[in-house]
Image 1 (cartoon, helix red, strand yellow):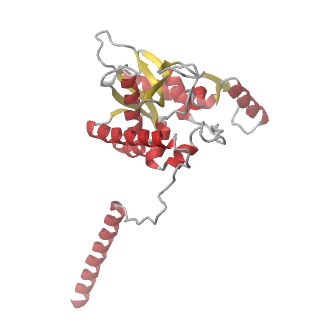
Image 2: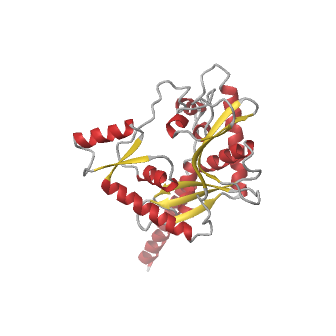
Length: 304
């Protein structure tokens, strides 16, 4: 499918990731690379600009991907394979056949882990302040919109909430899995993977398509190991304001580079001078202070 008109579309994720828009479009992951790495990294990760790019199929078990599919209840079909691991020829053939049919291959014992994670996540959400998350609505909807006149942008929304009877703005949720869902611990991971840019970028598309005037965006974060702790996290207004500036910068850079016909630049071609991180400096200063105290104590003992 080729998207020629801005709107909301229900298309397979494979088509989305291949870039389904009539012109090369900017996604939140590419926008994150543009800001966090360089325009060259963004170009390299784009399926329409980099002809050698291949979407990687993971041969190892990815509980997060499976939990995501089961939690959202989309059209992903699981193929449960009766095997201890993927090392046998029969298991590898079953995996390849499942992927060819558009299914997600998974070992039976791993599927039981996914069921446990999703059951615990749903149980916690039912008792959470944000119990309206992921219900009712539609899973995995593609948003495609025009920005700055003729810049195509796209986003794969985990959950498109149903319109509210009072026509007030709904809250949009995104499902994430992690090893530690405590908000303080997830903070670093969120910024490392550009979740702030995701929230801003998705909110931008939601507004452009008229789905909400002032949308709020939250993350449902669940741990992949027992006891499957769950947090619901929303960026503060200050964090959103900063992310909005990042997204604006990414779209502006995309608008310039996509029509320049020139190579996209990588890291700045100059020597970079770096300071030690604050935590490293503090650790060393503390060590010096302790050494100085020990030296004074030993000196005083000798004098006595």
